Structure formats: structure tokens, C-alpha cells
Length: 85
Image (tube, rainbow, N blue to C red; front, side, top):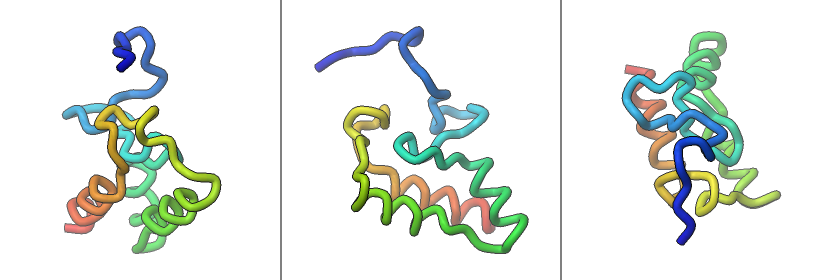
């Protein structure tokens, strides 16, 4: 397993408390801020639908980009619920 140092990171670690932008989906660029803006503008968000469609084509690279090594829909769903409350 390749361990990366802080200098090798290309995005802000989104789930870290206080991170701005707070990246939720490293493969397709969804952040808490982007979702909050969409919710503010339209009352809804297409984040999950967009992510799920892109996971099918072109496919995700969560094991490479997501620091947790897992897929993000659970984190995105939790963030949406928190932002809506």
C-alpha cells in the first residue's frame, strides 16, 4: 500500500472538521458547499443521482482518490440530511 504525505494531497480532506471546501466525493467533485448552494437555489440536490450515474459510466476511483478507501454515497447522504435539517 502506498502511503502519501500531506504534500502529495491535491484536494482538501473534506471530512476533516472545518475543512473548506469540504470534499465529499473525490471522484466527481461534490463538496458540502456545492450541495448547500444547490439546496439553497433549488430546494433539492442531484448530487447522489449524479454520483451514482457517473459511478456506472465512466466509473469511480474511490480506492485511489477517497482517503477512506471507500465509496462516498453514505457520506453524501448524511451531509444532505444534515444540511436539510
